[in-house]
Amino acid sequence: MFRNFTCLVAATLIAAMPLVAASPFKDPKLEAAIRAELKVDAKADLNDETLKNVFFLDANKKEIKDLTGLEKCTNLAQLKLDDNAITDITPLKGLVNIQALYLNGNHISDLSPLAGLTKLQHIEMERNKITSITALKNLTAMASLYIAQNQITDLAPLAGLTKLSSLNLAKNKVKDLKPLEKVNRLMTLNLQDNEISDITPLKTQENLSMLMLERNKITDLAPLVAAAEADAKGPMRFAPFLRLWLAGNPLSETAKTKQLPALKAVGVRLQD
Image (tube, rainbow, N blue to C red):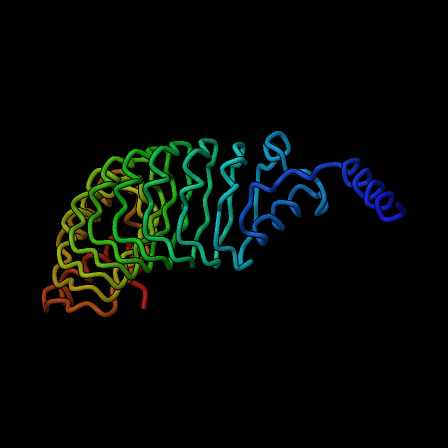
């Protein structure tokens, strides 16, 4: 009789306890970062309405692996997840309000979830496993793109990103710069450690202040000389302000004895 009464009391107490909603986050370290951003404790309910209050998230170096649940944070404008262990960014697919994304130092190869995030203006995804940037081709609001240290060969998806002002493609496998011909608002362009031999497409650049071309296969600087001399005679928008890095290229004798002095003559500053 007593045991039955005890069981009845226990059952009544359990029934009276408030139910805790299941968390939408599979990764406890991501959940902890979200709770820290919202300033709520471990018992607070992370419902859809609450998660709409996450506008910024800085969770660098947290050993996060799984982004499941982040799709609920529909008002995210800036997301920082550098140096984690992320491979799949599918939960970002519907975050249409995001403008700045930092995912450096992860294990990401597939960018397709980003294809519809047209408000993106700034992306940093250096030190990943990216081979294709096709998903970025319609992100025409993009102003800054940092994707160094990946395995990118084809720049064609960048051809329409004419608002780009800063582009870092160092340490990839780029050979052809033709897609950058109409991307002529660039102010900083880093192409170090690629496989570039022909810089003719750069002759359309009119705003460059920093151009990094070290350790490529460049022998001829004529296109750059032509662009700089034309600028010096006309608008003087970039030649007098351009800093140029060329170390580690197999420059021809003509490039060394005539083209480099010609660049210096119009104000280009050659950097070691």
